[in-house]
Image 1 (tube, rainbow, N blue to C red):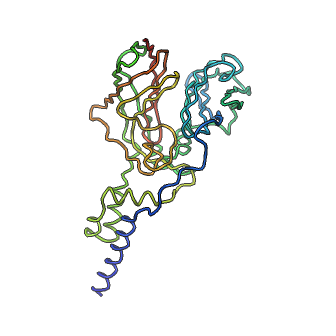
Image 2 (cartoon, rainbow, N blue to C red; image 1 turned 60 degrees about the vertical axis):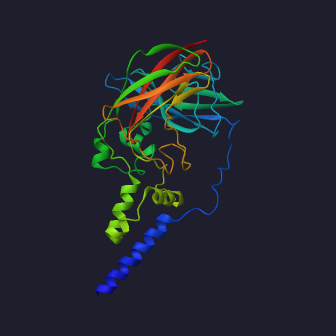
Image 3 (cartoon, one colour; image 1 turned 135 degrees about the vertical axis):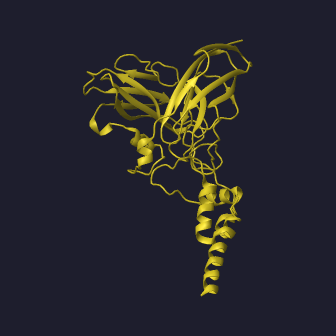
Length: 329
């Protein structure tokens, strides 16, 4: 009986080690899609009520390009109707799917009217229609589910207790710098620690100990876990996101090349391995500074007026901050 137990444990250990240490024998194949030249689909994500009786309509977009980041000034090619054409929408568009990018407040008496976002990119016109129909009501569980933090239609006591991070930019909201001059950007991010950050290495160690005991745990390293993740298919029917608090600064408006140091995590759904995106297979949540302060240096290569967008994201929920930068020669 003892030899049988040891044999079973040995088989479990060997199976686990083989699974974790397997390597890809062929190079990764690039996605069969477009890098540039394609259009952008504006998207109405839903609406949520405000305490004062008004409503916020939520919009995002799908940039069909993997690399091109089009710039479209507010005007006939990037406008809202009825009313003001400028409703705070981006004019710089990041690649691929960007959900819940911004919100537009409408009055309490909006009724059954539609708010239309028109976007024309690379010669293709597209529209998104915002409405207060009941089917489009959004709450925190919908946001967490749609962005991949939760499985479709699922929740837990932890996820229902989650509060969004709170983002506070230190210093002026409007700044002036010169081309090539590094601008220090300090942001405080506070969070409740929910959801629990994803730690694939710790999860693998727990599984190894369960099936093989301490001996199996010794074979679990970050490297072989990463190799295993490369081979693992998605386990959710929705987009799959790795939970963990991060802050990402990006260009929201402005056409020049802007460099951020250190490199920022992508706020868009780049599912490729090693993409430095929470939706990428090998992404590891960064360690948050003990004082909650995040420091970034920003450098601009062209003069103009820019709006920078900072999103703090805990995996399930988010909070946004904006600053305007006037860049001179």
